[in-house]
Length: 379
Ligand SMILES: Cc1ncc(COP(=O)(O)O)c(C=O)c1O
Image (cartoon, rainbow, N blue to C red; front, top):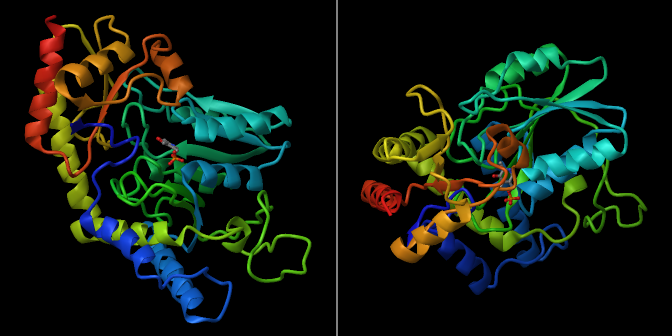
């Protein structure tokens, strides 16, 4: 199979990731972290803390809480920090893992404003200032759109947030391990990530990274913390406040290996390899008759390795099925859980076919995928 659905999850992982998960279980050395003083519990605690500090280093975070994925991280952060009195600025490019928690807050009284995009899917940056209200509390944006692959200018938005004393919350689901993230330089207060995409970790891993600013989180999910067991309330300390219950230590062992892989190659090198693949594919398909491409492919524009398209009036589902049945190509059709960007592009009914790449893809695969599209265009 030609796997071009890496924005959904990276299918091929470094061998070291599979080995790490295997050994985490097979060696029988990892107990429940922070639940005892025997060797197995301490081994698990040491492993968890080591992955925590490597993850913090990767993003320039002060500390990290682990969660099951970005969806859990975003839900916890948004519901923990924001209140019905708040106004929140977000964008039409967001994923439902941002939109749906925000809509729940809206039902409770919070106000939402959405920054729009231009015809290339780029944010209309002046709108951030224009949307500011006296009760604006936070800006929530994705670093890279899972639909167009366009990256946003985090420095610019972070600078705006810091000047206006707003919380800056970033969804790095499509950029962690792919694009440069430096929380301090980009003035990011909270960064939510998932482990199973560009970090090449196992599914079931992700987390919440904190910047420098101290934040008063409210518990939204409570349970066993391994300490203060007689308190009726969840401890408020970070990361304990978000880590109720047993951690996914076996998964974190795999995430550790995924992060090591990313650090070994280096974000700059990964970014340039992925850019080469994306631009090769884009270059080969851009003139196919009937093709519509979404996103900004200008040379200087930073982007995640995503190319979303439509071919004439094919439904994205039919085109994806044809790619799979006739060419053994795996892509993602439909709305990609990001409804507002489809409204902006007018693709609510057709959806889009998304090709997304990882460092395990090759230039030859780009040529194969482009050739398949060309053949389908002439049916
Ligand atoms: C931009 C964006 N945010 C959040 C998510 C949610 O990630 P997860 O499913 O790992 O929670 C995704 C997943 O595709 C995404 O693309």
